[in-house]
Image (cartoon, rainbow, N blue to C red):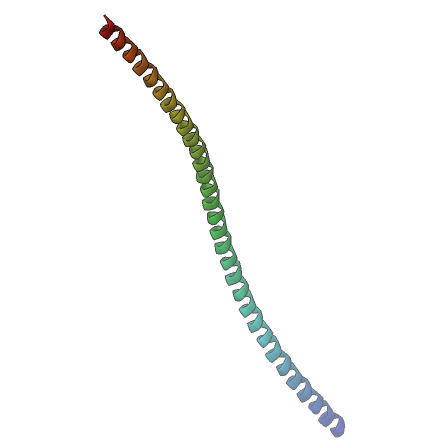
Amino acid sequence: KEADTKKQAEIEQELRTDQDDLKKKIAALENRNRDLADRLQKAEQEKAEKEDQLAQIRNELAGAHEKASQGEKFQLLADDLQARITELETENQELRAVIDNISELTQQKQEAR
């Protein structure tokens, strides 16, 4: 019986040691879990911030595309207006030439009288 009691005490001591080891492992795992949860939360926060920045950049890009598109439209309009101005200047020169011819003919008629 004494041997059994001694054996039982050894087993109980071994179980307590194993239990203490398990408690330490559990505590370490819980700490690691908290650390990972904190890191995950920070990563999610950073991800949300990056997504906000990305959305802002996309909006700015859309605005830039809109402005570029308007710039292209303005350039086309400016090109059309410049072409029209050139046409009008040519027409004006032609009319001046006609006026100068008429004026010259009129002056010649007056001098002939």
